[in-house]
Length: 380
Image 1 (cartoon, rainbow, N blue to C red):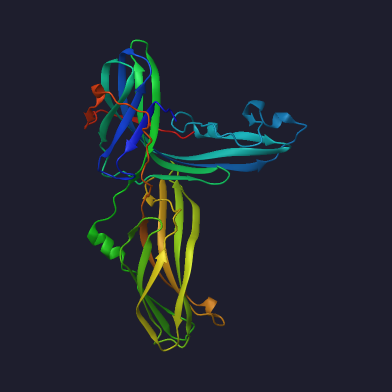
Image 2: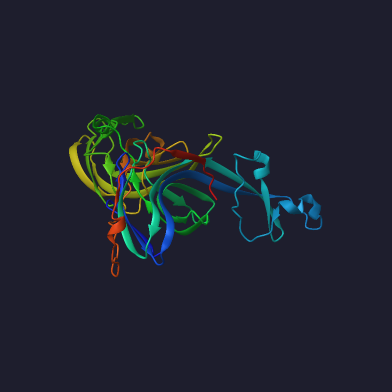
């Protein structure tokens, strides 16, 4: 981090549509006859999958694969072949690891990158410490911040936002200093009416091998949560028309992550159970009505996001389980409700010890330029 430029954001996470408010601190170590100070806000979103497929290779006949297409490395090089500028067949490369040849195929999902620019100050700047406040507009339909990378790095995705401050020397056509900081956004959730509807779980009743039916219903106090928060559940389990006892009710949270590439092909990256908790069952002929339970959401969950490039979804499931002979042949009794996980960040701490601010640039920047630059962003 450049200690001559610091950012302070008043809110750890900003709601989409609200301004990103904060302060920027700049330390100028030598007088500048003419400087131009620019603040930008940039967004980018992408998904990327790299596949390796082993292909026949005869080491004694290197002409099988043209040398220029071989990447002789111990790992895949993730150099980008832009889908916007080259035919798809040119994206296919090869990797030689020892005596094994792989074909490397890359699948990209890309989204336009938006850059907002505001010129903050132009003129002479003397040595010293300066600060100014800023207020950056955001769009109402922006998605929550999201970042994913698996262990081997072959599957990645990001929905990111950052603020960059740049001090340019226009007479020399150069940049004196530049520093960026990530900012975090929460996408807006459904209306209150829609949230209420989604909190009502589906009522399920299924035949269990001619031994009667079991009815299960589920309700949540809300459907919008932050990691580490408690989910308050109310469920009803009606076993009065079944001859089998329900040994337990299993509550679990499912995370499903999907990447969508530029050919609109959906690829499921993860479909996993992130936590599970067992609740009490009920005997045959009995009913558990409006039972309450509390489940803690894991603290390390990524935010919910649903775009044309990335979908990260969470579903709270409850299943009535009868541990008896051949019950695995029956249709499971499951309730499911989609829930929304928000981005969560700790408050920022800035150490300004030793900074002595001069008043010349204690200005407030409340609006960005209306000019929006759209760039095709391709991940590297």
